[in-house]
Image 1 (cartoon, rainbow, N blue to C red):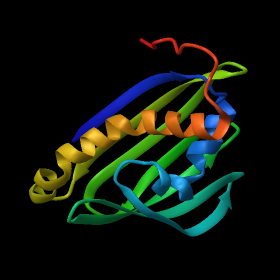
Image 2 (spheres, rainbow, N blue to C red):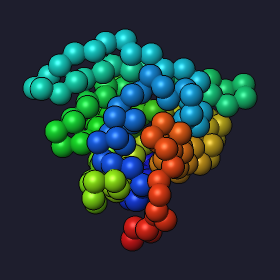
Image 3 (cartoon, rainbow, N blue to C red):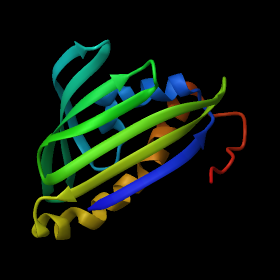
Length: 158
């Protein structure tokens, strides 16, 4: 089982970052390894938007697709992702966006996963781990393009 968690301070509002990460259909434009993403179902449950998303991830000749349920909780600025099908035996992912002031926020990114086979672990394990570590930076770079570069030096988060 692999676990990765980071809290990253960015020069964009919590609402802007929530909106950016919630716009899953744009992931292929900038997210490492994400080649395609389609929403196959969209519904509302208990006031939250729930998406069933099918993502194709790949690198060179390796291609895998995975299906997840994505729960968008704008009131709490949280996104929860649950694994439904694909190359993993387990995957859970959480994003939280904590406002630090009107123009900045902390992104709390957490993912835990395990591949369903040793072969997939050997083929994609290291590559996927590196991509996961790059996710928060990819979203921050995308935010800079969409909302403009922040006018401050980000503070490190312990």
